[in-house]
Image 1 (cartoon, rainbow, N blue to C red):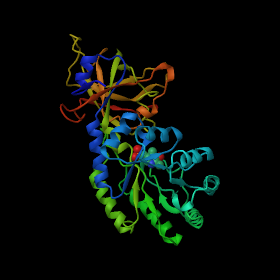
Image 2: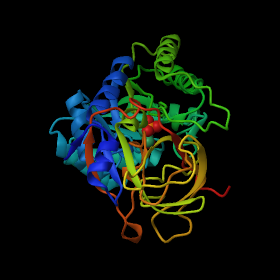
Image 3: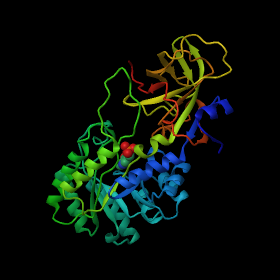
Image 4: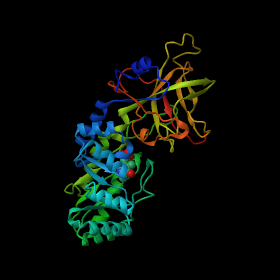
Length: 406
Ligand SMILES: *Cc1c(COP(=O)(O)O)cnc(C)c1O
């Protein structure tokens, strides 16, 4: 992989017409280590956030030794980079053949359920493979209510009373039993984890045996930009969230229970930026070479605003306007689909023109993993960059990715 000091150097050297991902391995390692140092338990990176081989390999180098996986593709991706990394199979709804593959081929011994029929599938597989139930830790996923940019608690999780029954059944079967929750991605309310811990406490107090683990899922917020015209969401820093979380864990009496977290976004967001090129400027519209079917689909809630840096093409000799003036541009994606328009503008210097580049920062989470091959566009060019996105000149603008109608 070619290495550059920063995205500007890469853009000017390569003059790329295709989108280029700028990977920052040192930032990834630092963010992973920072999380591991502040979370009082096991850190299992959520592979779905960004399962690229270079990401998983770098995380192993950083000392991450456990991964939250959800599918055969993710089992294989982790095994490809490490023969002994632990995998936690944390998808509540699984096919019986995938459960078998996980237990038999990949040696997975941590799994989640949120319904009695999932327990039935699991017990069919453990009986067929003659696995001692005591070697298997089964987490029961409980429903939580919270505020996150991506609300995921509506889809999965057992209600508290039902969770008590599921736990007791698993305990009678001889399994080690844990509780887990996942509050959604990019939490927007610092009370979210406390409410989930309160539910877990309610269940724990009724099961009548010791829990083998408590898994707090993901949701830890990454740093993004913010729309200067809108009210800034008042969120504590990760350090503050973690220190509060440690306090809540003690208060609810979970400090003796083995803890797990499944962070994704907070670990990988800053590790990538993306260089896109302006294929055409048409008035206040920019047609770029990426879009919602490729790297920019982490947008379906419209809640994420990414910092953006202008990389002017030095070959453009004359420009209209003032580089200091930041103006809103409607951004059209690369495909021929009329849905592929970001309805929130990118705010960029009004001098931007056909041929210029834009570096979109903090795009490591849910960008590469959500690319499609729609219309034949599939960004897959990587360079390595050493300077963190936030160092050097402040970004000139921001890219708000909302795709819903304005
Ligand atoms: C998606 C997911 C995660 C990761 O969430 P982030 O918000 O990216 O940290 C963790 N656990 C489960 C079960 C998930 O589905």
